[in-house]
Image (cartoon, rainbow, N blue to C red):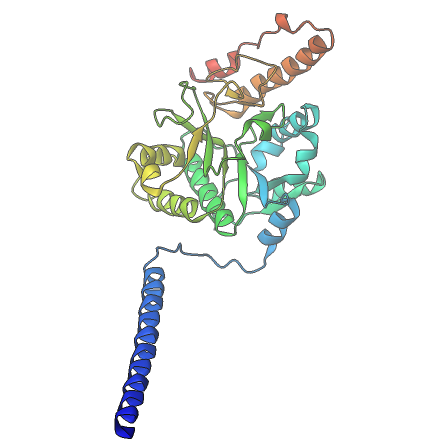
Length: 338
């Protein structure tokens, strides 16, 4: 009888040991699967993002949610007869509705010493971009070789900003900010990219649009990092194409959908340009001197837009906005004849 009890206790002991070993082994297997799945996750490559001058400049200009407004300038934008393109750009912020305070979150990226010195003189947030011996000083005529090089250098820089974990609005300096654009940008939904269009086709989610990289808002995440990686990787096999053309080509090939990007195409009612004027001056946020060739033409017609805006504000104070009309963009239309 005693032997039977001893055998029974031994059998119970063995079963307990086997159960513990099984549970331990099962737990290890699950954890191994977890680690293996992350080993194969396509994490983006990262640049050296230790503290440096760019980190300091971004931190100084950013909002509490790490969003920065970025514009790129060279000597052609800041030098010459007054007002310069940079003067006009800043005047838009000062004369706009709810825009003056946004200058505190504007980072001017200067590609030469003249534009950097001017930026510092104006008391703005400034960053001097190294251009590896490439001359970006003078005016770069639309679609010239130097123009295309400058656009790609800009793209590489913005890729660096994305990798540092900053969201940003990129704006060309030939964009007048007449109203705070943030109320017209979708911030409640987790959109990855909101990009301007030359002509709005009615559906903000349709990839049929012609995009314009002169104004867009982008969030920093794995998907947008992968987008910038693929975008810049196509530089050397896209001879004669500017970066905007390559991004649009990626979109047409379904790459946005492949990445799972949530993209909104901005209505020219709010984010307008010379390709397509806003239909309603009471809501327009930005005016871009697109569909235009050359600094002189852009300056002439943007100066007229600034005057139009002042006239609108006078009419608004007199409740007479029904008589408002945008001036014709004659200088820009004529710029294509030369």
